[in-house]
Amino acid sequence: MEDLTLKLGLLMEAAQGQQAVAATALEGLRAHTAGLDAVVRDEIRATLVAEFRELHQDTQRAAQALARLRRVAGLRTVLWSALLSVTTVVVPLTLGRVLLPSPAQVEALRATRAGLEASVERLRQAGGRVDLRKCGATRRLCVRVDRQAPAYGEAGDYRVVQGY
Picture 1 (cartoon, rainbow, N blue to C red):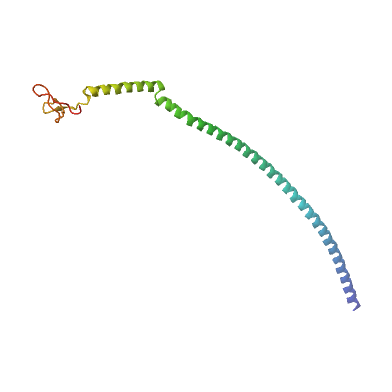
Picture 2 (tube, rainbow, N blue to C red; picture 1 turned 120 degrees about the vertical axis):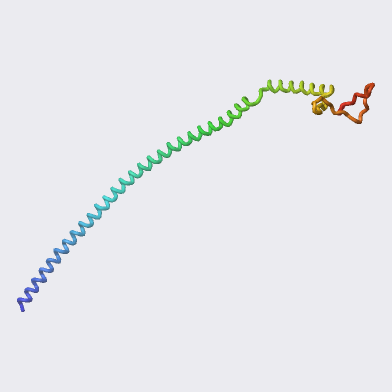
């Protein structure tokens, strides 16, 4: 039995040695893992910093492009507004100048109208309101007379024209 005890003791001693070696290996592995954790974190940080720098540069370029676009849009808006304002003033003025008579022409037309009104009044007084027509198959000239008015002339063959 001693032999078995000795073997068992040796086996236990070998297991303890293996356990000590495994514990040492585990401690080394833990230390190595902790070191890897720090390395991975540093790599992630470096990658994030680089990506954020690129993102910041891209954002700066986008902001500059938007600022240029805003300046160009503002300039275009000012130009279009000025063009529209000038057009809304120039077109009616040009049309008025082209289509409407000048003050001299208006005054000449007023003078002509006054002369024509005076002529029409003279014609009315001189018989311009006479209602003349062509009558009958032979289209003879006839006049509308006032049948209520008395006849004149030696033979009574003159009549008063209607409206006088």
